Every structure is written in C-alpha cells, then in structure tokens.
Length: 233
Image (cartoon, rainbow, N blue to C red; front, top):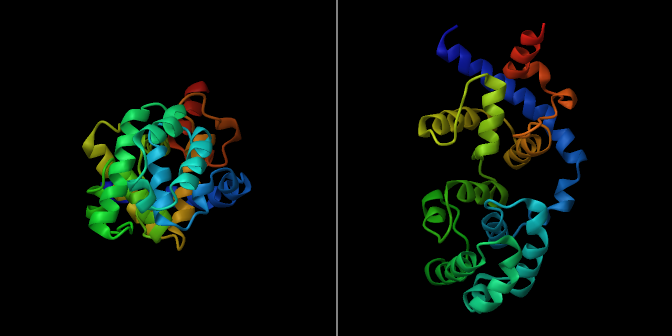
C-alpha cells in the first residue's frame, strides 16, 4: 500500500468515526453542561477557551459564568481589578498569570481591534495568552471556519485509529495529524459539530488511561484495537 493510499484510508476511517460520534455526542448533552458551546459572542468563547487550557471543562464552568457576568465585554475586562480577577480565577490555579493575561487581553482587544475579537488566525495568535489551539477553536466555534482542532487528546485518538505512534512533542507528528484532520473536517458541513464530536469521543471513550474499548462504537475502525484482539488469540 502506498503512503497516499494509507492516508486516504485513514481519512475515510476518521470520517466514519466522526459521523458515528456526532449523534452520540449530541445525546451526551454536553452542550447544556458546557455553556460556551452554545454561546455566540466571540469574546465569551475566547475567554472560555483561555480558561480551558490545562483545565477540565466541568471545573471551568462556574468560573467562566462568574467572569462573563462581571466582565461581559472586552471594555469591562480591560478596566477590571487584577485583585478581583485573581479571586474569581483562584479555583483554576495559575490565577496570577491568568488574571494578568485576561486584563491585557481586554486592553489589546479594545485598543487594537475596537473591542471586537478578530477572526484571522495571525491576528488571534497575536493576542495575550492565545496559542494555535485556542485561536483555531475561536475560529471554529465563533466564526464557523473549517479548522481542525488538534490537541494531545486528538493526537491520541488518531494514533490509536491509525496504529501509528504519534506524539504531541514531535512537530512532524502534529503536522501530520493537522493535515489529515484538515481533509476530514472539510468534508463536514458543520465543522463545529464535527470537531466537538471528536473531542467528546476522546474525553469520554478513547481516554488516555483505561479507554472504554468494550463500549466503543468505532472498534472496527481502530488499528490499535485490532492489534490487541489479534495478540490475545
């Protein structure tokens, strides 16, 4: 099998995985549990994605709700007291750094972008605290761009489905996953729903530890599962 055929086959399997995952993901009601998923305001989506860095969504919810209640606009955030921000952010850890970043974010959005969140990738990446994942998440969730969302959890899923050992620390591996997922996400009319379905699958079924293979609806697509079954025979 050529490399091109291998990539095409992988693209097809991931498309099928996401297709199956979409209806399953909707049934979880995670959109109701994670309020930024149904939010339309790009500013609030950006704030949520910044809070979600290295933090589980369930822990972020009360902090996010209080933060956007107190500071519903970039203008309000720019005028926020650092001490008040620290108090709100304390449950998430790194509250000193997060407080400074958020206040600076408000200032930059007001002074450079007139209080609006930009939609171009390079402009989003210029904002305080914003890396590639957060920038692309904002583009997908707020502006309906067909960007793939690639983090360590998604790399794990693609690694298991493909049977190829892929590591987030390896830039070539990250680029490979990004390129494959770009082709996949382009095929779905709703890139937001497709990305969220894959993220939910990674969080609930294809977990880093103790993956729920016996409950997985995509076992037949998974090269790693096939190897495990073969090794036990």
